Image (tube, rainbow, N blue to C red; front, side, top):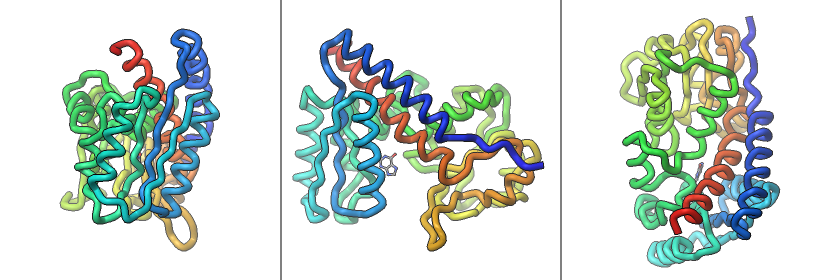
Length: 285
Ligand code: GUN
């Protein structure tokens, strides 16, 4: 039987609508408009599309978009200065430095220069530490989006077997922590995992976030599992996820498509994080 398709576009639209209402209430209460600063180094075409979508939706929900687009040749010290200035600018509530950066720039150093209160990607060691500690903070957008999709689908996580494929700082590790906080039994797989398919087949909830096109097929999916595909791999014939959608959909109970699954959730959660960051700064400042 074919799986139910999880409609990320619709869930993301609902989140954006909720943020829009909350932004209006925040403006009413405080007299200020939350601002999101985006920093895009260089002119990578895919990153340009991502960032322009982030800027457009920021304005659609009633927030301000502030953009910086330094040349790919920028020196690391100059980029660090820009990130620190934005960290001190009172009109800026959230900062997003689009990744990946050109090879001569150390992304860890740039991330560590972010003001943690404005780190709407949840990437700084401070916010990663809060998440590891189980204390509320700014949570990375894609993992937050995955959890929102699971909640929207009514997926029972308490005691469920969850398998995450991929251990990146941006997705794999934080989504595993969120699943653990929701009382799932969590396994993280990576490139050295011995029998990937066998481990994945244990999952009631399978999260693919590894960046290898169509790595997981029907043999990696337990019948009746919920499959969330975070992969966004650009191939000559279009965008492909980390899951072989047609094969997995024959076995799973529900599955996210690529595109139209997790992708739209990332921007929606970025907007939600920006409002959250504005609220934290207004109440603590
Ligand atoms: N590049 C791809 N995804 C992301 C993201 O969520 N945040 C940032 N900053 N860069 C990205």
